[in-house]
Length: 411
Image (tube, rainbow, N blue to C red):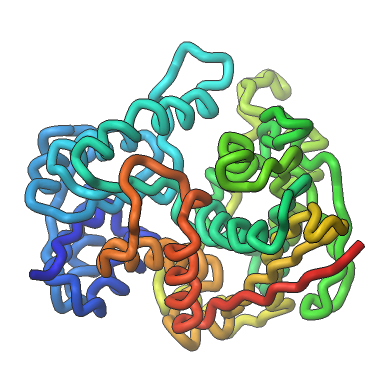
């Protein structure tokens, strides 16, 4: 009997998961739910196996009722709904997938977000194990796909000292479009200190700090990448000994159009969340900047219109660097992730490159659930896949044009 999947959230990520699962032979039914019923109906209208439902995810009972009888609950909602959806999956004895790390679980800690991740892993891991189910958190492109690529990288080493996740986004169009995903999420990440794992400890690092420079032949010029608030160094730090061969330092580095836009704003204090008096009027700089940013394109028509106006640059890089020893010698492993750019993503699926790699990357985690390819239970982050799970992930990714190139360099 095929699987029944509940997809909560019908934005770019949830919609991509639903569309990919609509093609899976082992999936019989997909329930697409959101508060925005118009978005639900639009999605369900193009699927064969789906039905729609309206839900207020603040209402636990409503979410639990939808989850009942489902094999998997996919959470593509904003972070604030995480606890409700996790609890609903447990009540339904269903597997669980989350694109991000939920917020608001621990309020009285100095760093509530980090404390929340630790809480989720310690509190819910035994609960999912007890019902023989698996929950996976951080299942987009970054975190997500890049975490699985990091697991592949450390396979080639006997021991690991340093791990870099480098993302460069060089897509630029003639229209003013600094971000291809939620502007509030983008600017929020850029307006706070980043996370890194340094000398065996999870620490905060200055936003836009600690720059590195790399040259990738497929980009065509040297790129600058800086510290950026992301989950990956936290995951790797928590699992340094169990999954990353004793890594001591781990960083997430980010560069490209979005960084080039935000960094001078940050330096000028325009990403501050503090209310200021400006010529006798109260204003929050962050809110003012946000109000002037365009929303990301969502539909085929919107993406096509932007492309037709003109593409200035259609390039990018997602690279994992792992440093350590192999056979007693110092070695650097580079894992380059190749994926369709803006124009190719549009031609393939009518979506942007950001939507493609994040949505497809997330759907690949769902595909493992649909085909019973996970061989563990409990609550894990996406960097904790087994070798067999990771191999299946990238075998499936290759069918979507997402491939890996591994380079071993003795240093």
